[in-house]
Length: 186
Image (tube, rainbow, N blue to C red; front, side, top):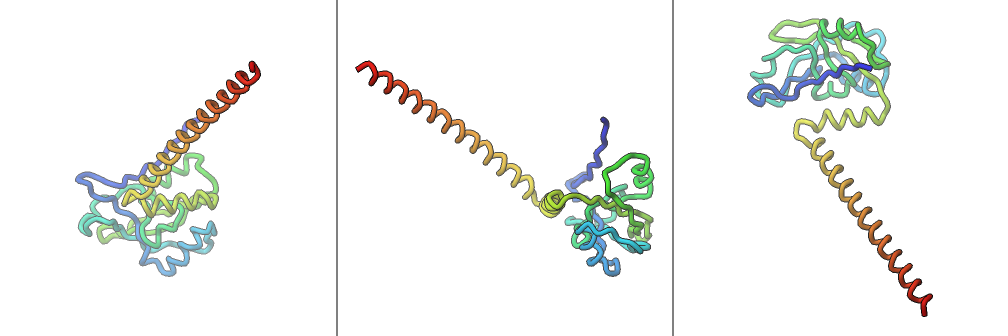
């Protein structure tokens, strides 16, 4: 089985931080984003008008590159999905992708022009949603990677301790057997 993965860059040349879509200008956006995070399918939404690009970098770099896919930032980061271009939406529609997923028409303000774009949402289990939140909220300051490293080190230490305990038990067991053997000769 072949599969494809969309890998959204976090950094670009000269360590510029990738821009993300911010929906702070969307009427009732915060309420809608909460509903989407909870897995509620939104009916009767004509268009999310409008997102703008933002990052943790200097403001002059926010609109330097228009890509086919953006993560979300701030309140919009509750959306379980991405902001995608019309071109990427057309491509995704040709493939079988995870269910359930939904497209919502939106607009992205890029260099003073509102570009037609789409929100694609993926709904999943509560555990996956929590992991997604952790990844989105901590990746820029490497907390996620640090947590992974700590967990990996903890598991290695745990494995080492278990192996040492096993060896100690085997050694004490063999001493008991040797002592029983020497006691039976007397």
